[in-house]
Image 1 (cartoon, rainbow, N blue to C red):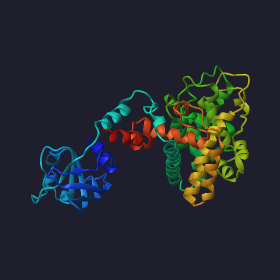
Image 2: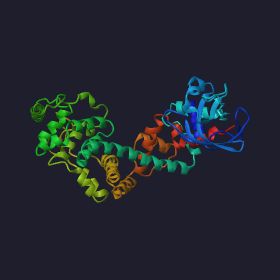
Image 3: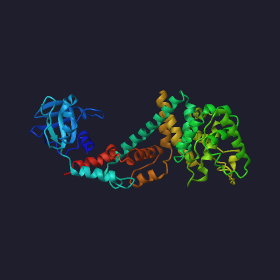
Image 4: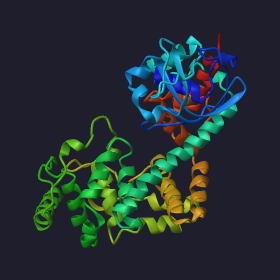
Length: 427
């Protein structure tokens, strides 16, 4: 509840400006101050006018006035700078360490504010504000969606920056790990990133002239060779022998097979094929980052991922069982996802981290040119009336859902803030 009072104070959501302290001084808040998330008073450098005189200092907020004593502030000199104590319930006067009384203000907040927040936070629906969204001005939604798109991009920049530091500035290594993660298409993204880290380029490049050895290393490190029902399949036998030799030579430890999700996924998305595609890009040396940077326009970018798998993978989705034709690695829809989740973030991160802001522009232009993702998250927002015409917007909606809706951070969401602001001032 104290956090809610801080929110009301920070955003000036009290019902009336005609306020007085508990000892009768008229109060006008000129500036609520800066929220402090560390130790000490809740707000720094607030400006409050009392009976025409302006006071500058800190503000402390509690649900009950007696919390001041319970938290030991009356004995802590760090709180002597507090010019006003803001509470919901005034059940005791409060004093500084020298015994001087501190002005105390009861914050006038509509009970509907707490009720509205509780309804949002405790709603069992995945989009708790869906029915209220039409009440929010379209400009508020549009500006928030734009901000969320960049928030999501900057989150990916942080991940890429960490990888670049890990690999001593090697953008090809960064691209390799990001490609692996992207090929997991959500379900196996974590597992494929783990595999890329366990089978790094510096190891794979030693064998980049042999598809057999690359696939043996990757499938073996994935822990998938021991799970294959080969039924005498000679290629599976070759893979196992190669991996056994290489694992002994380089002291390799495979992943646990349980890391991979196989249930209810289409054969085209089996991790074995994604790993075969990863091996395809490493064959003859991994240079995908260079080719992405050199590509001119969406058409050339798409050509980088219009891959036909050869050899064993022309007739196999997994190890052992043969199928009529399985050569195409990625569908057009899958390539869209790769452009959204691999290429655009790499462009944006490269521009941010090298100062080449033409690349950040290319990232935005690419996302604006691509169709929005077709998934349950986007469909739910569209069903609630949010317009989504491109991938930049669909990425924003995914960010909204994952960073705010799922964790019920409604008070930090501009849509939630708008709805709660309206509730806070109602009588």
